[in-house]
Image (cartoon, rainbow, N blue to C red; front, side, top):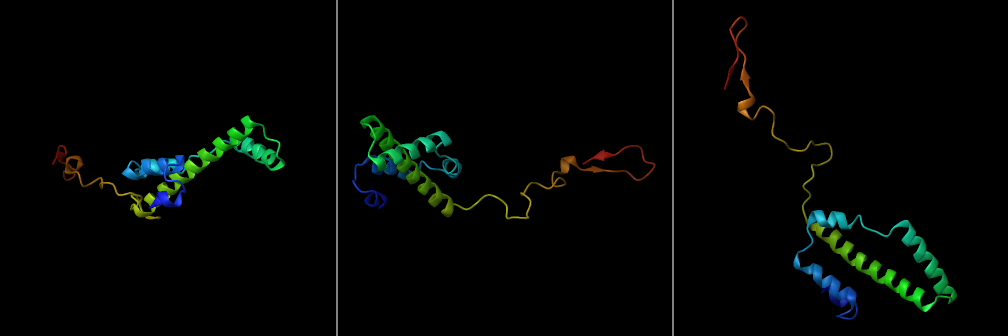
Length: 127
């Protein structure tokens, strides 16, 4: 069970993981989730806070801010893991490389087919 791997059964991460176990994650949503991430400004701020934490110079507010970044990062990692897992077992609907997407052949719809008359005849007739 996924929650056993997350530590405390009712930690924020464990609760969040259970929310997504009910099939709420679809392939299109999973592909979108894999594109999510922290902005460059947030990454810079996290590095700054982590460095100050190593030096032991964080204020209480900064420690709380760093903790919030860690929690959000953990939740995002869990969701992205679930997205990768779902996409791995979901058959792709994309064509194989080098093969065109399947679409109806333009001549399959007979309403668009015109039979041309032999040369010199009055006009084409529709089928």
